[in-house]
Amino acid sequence: MKDLMLDANFPRDAEGRTYHVGTKPGEVANRIITVGDYTRARRIAKSFDGGKPLFEHESHRKFLTLTGTYKGTPITVVAIGMGFSLVDFFVRECRAVVQGDLLIVRLGSCGSLSDRANVGTVVVPYESIGVLRNYDHFTGKTDTSSRPYTITQPLPCDKALHDQLFSALQATKPKVDANLFDGNTNAPVALDNIKNASADSFYSSQGRQSDLFDDQNEDLIKELQSQQPDLQTFEMETYLLNHLAIAANSSKSVTSGQQGTMRMGAVQMVFANRASQAFITPEQVEILELWCGKAVCEALVSIQIKDDKVHGEGVWS
Ligand code: R1P
Image 1 (cartoon, rainbow, N blue to C red):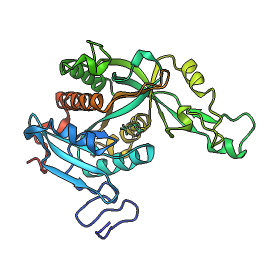
Image 2 (spheres, rainbow, N blue to C red; image 1 turned 180 degrees about the vertical axis):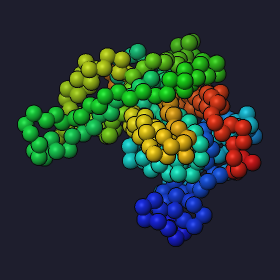
Image 3 (cartoon, rainbow, N blue to C red; image 1 turned 30 degrees about the vertical axis):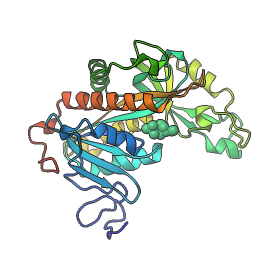
Image 4 (cartoon, protein in one colour; image 1 turned 90 degrees about the vertical axis):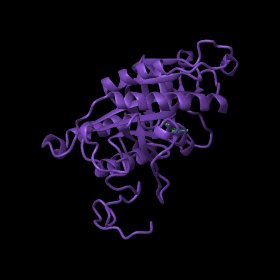
């Protein structure tokens, strides 16, 4: 941090830059793609008009924001890192600097639970459940009937975004060398109508086994699959995005009409298959990220939102 922050409740500098993401009004578009890492963010920005962003900012906390236009419409990519707490920083701080409706799509990697979604497959989930470690259970500070993991009810992704994402993926599917995808001439494949689970750990709450910690997760995957038969993917962000959209849309600022709504979608690239132990190659990753980056831009600009007539003043004007 180099600038003086004002307001301890929601810290910003004198120009309105937020404390962690570090952007101010006019630097973030109403259509946002969020990703885990910088390489993916820069690959997506290759689909922007002119092949590059018009604005970029790397914050002291390592959030990377790239804003440009796609077919003339402003669009922003934010690389946030991993997990629920960074999603919370990202969504709340971007909401604070953008007026009007927000469309947010997470383009992330995931693990799959079976051969239905093999490595190299791209999945568009329609809903997500949360799998959360029940901390009190491990310290005995709860009743004896407690479970080591809390499995939430599913929360939906936005239906229109889900459908547009899947059709854009099909429309932009690249022709690839089948040798790069184990001889599968139909690869890479996109699947829709999949259920996702977002976990609060890459390890314990995704059922990975360890002798180094008491995780009590030997039966977790079986339990999840029996409760949620459509469940195919594990990652660490989508559930909280869907939850924050509900929280934002029921807030005073939205119900009073002062602020626009928030809608979430997700595209998940299968990097690992937990059943077969297969893992994606760097060549496959590059193909998927370029393909999905373009498809997500297409889907985002195909959906009309309230602010489309003017786009407001910004780095894109
Ligand atoms: C774990 O390796 C990370 O990869 C997935 C998970 O959700 C988690 O954030 O997403 P990204 O590829 O977007 O980082």
